[in-house]
Image (tube, rainbow, N blue to C red; front, side, top):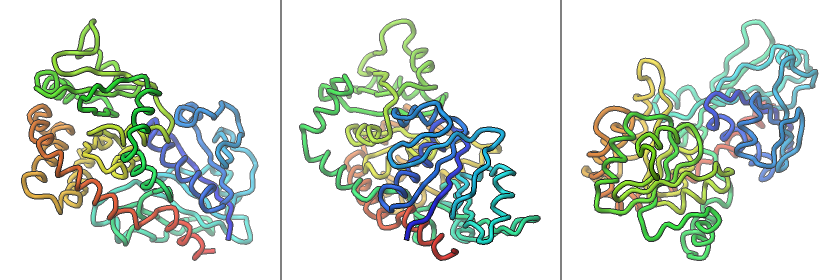
Length: 369
C-alpha cells in the first residue's frame, strides 16, 4: 500500500546528510512506489550529488518531489509519514499542522548510524511531544537485526559483481573519468581535513608500491596540494589525481574500481561496505571525542571474524587516521592484510545485506497507521 512521505534534511555535513536522505527518498519512490517529498535547506549540496537538480523552490528529480526548505515555511498539508533525518527540527508551522490533522502522521526521527550497544534498546522507542498530541518514534540504522539496518538498493550487489567480472566496464569507467591507472594500486580518498594526511602520503611516496590516489574535489584538496608544494601532484611512488565530484551512482563505481577506499561521515561509509573492499573510515569528529566510542564499537563488530593480526592492523590504521598513532606506519601493516580484507569485505557485505533499512522503515510505519 502506497503512502505519502515527507523527508526533511538539514544539511550539516555538506554531503553525508543529503546523501543519505536522497538515497532513501529515491528508494522509497522507485522501488516501493511511495510518493515522496524531500525538503532540503541547502539546494547547492543537493545539486552536487544530483546534477539534474536546480536551484528552484520545487522540482521533480528521479521520481521524487524536491522542495526547498525555506523560511517562512510554505503552507502545506503534512503527508502520512514525516521523517526527520538525523534529528533536524521540523518547522513550527508544519508541526502545528500535523497536530491539527484528524489522523496524525507517523513521525519518525531517523537517527545517525552507530554500532553502540545502546542503539538496540532505543530503536523504535516512542517519545510523546510535551505540548502537542503527537508521538515521535526513534528509528536507528544499524548493523544487527534488532536495529533498522542499512540502505541497500535491490540490485546494487549484483551490479557490483557484474562490474568486478567485466574488464570492459572497468576500462570504460577509467576512460570516462579521464584517468589511466596503469596497473598501480588505486586508492580513493574522500575525507575531511586531517593532520594524519602528510604521514600517510609520505609513506606512499617512499614505498615500493606505485600508488594512484583519487581525490574528489572538495575541502581536502587544498591540504593535498600543500603536501606537494607548487609542483605536480606526484612524489616518489605516489601520484594524486583530483577528480570531479561525481553523482551518487558514479561514486559506487569509483569504490568498486579502487583497491582501497578512504571514506568519511555516514553515507560514503555505508557505500564502502557494500563495495566489499578494504576501507578506512574517518568518523565525523564530535566534542569530548565521543566519536571515538562509535569508532571502537564498529571496529569490534567489523573485526570480529578477522584473525588477530589483521584485526590489529585495521584497528591501528583507523585509529591513526583519527589522530591516535602514526598513519604512515599503520598503513604498512594494513596493506599487508589486503587479501584477507578483500575476502572479509565481501562476506561482511553479504552478512549485512539481509537487513534493509528502507524495507524495515516501511514496515515500521505501516504498523503505526
